[in-house]
Length: 271
Image (tube, rainbow, N blue to C red; front, side, top):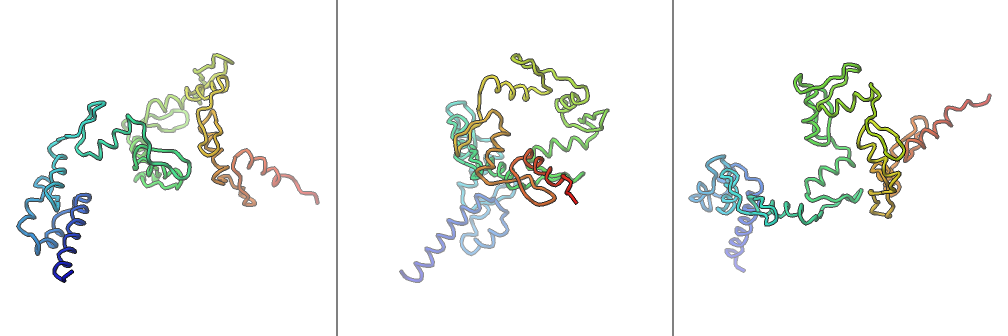
């Protein structure tokens, strides 16, 4: 291969990379104009979005981008009729109908339809809380939780408990909280007449009578009636021991085991 041919081939590879990179980032044209001025300066303007200023290295990518402004959605789901502006978005949507969950958490084996949902879920394991309240400094794993939390600081849309001063962003949460003070337990088991403050607590309790264990460990197949019990069980496989003794540093999988262990330190030593 001659030096001229090799140089031409390298330029073609560079162009392909720029097309892919520009399509993803949609960055402003200043840098691209400098890079492409020596190659094809006469075509730069025609690949620039005149509505937002983003530029692209080919007309195809610009055409796809323009659908954001025009609202064009040429890709339609044959099952529900919902439309999308890109094939990738349609493919992701189809998993709702097929039930496909290709993105699996390496720590707890929970699977997700979308990669962004997996990345969001991973914060539970890593403890990362990137969304911080600028008023009180409290951090959250999800943006939606922060948005909901911000209502507490707003005078509008906020429910305040007159007995303990606690604030709530939602009326339902406020109503549930008030049962702590009133002692109200409106949800009663039809089998044993036991009462509960929350509907979810009753539903969880009912599994004692039905024997239903909907939460199954994907590693050993053991099933549990409560999600919390499965989560605690998973610590056996992961080796996680989140409950640590402040006096001797020994760790345990369960809070009840730590409480039992603490009796060792509370015993009076003989003289």
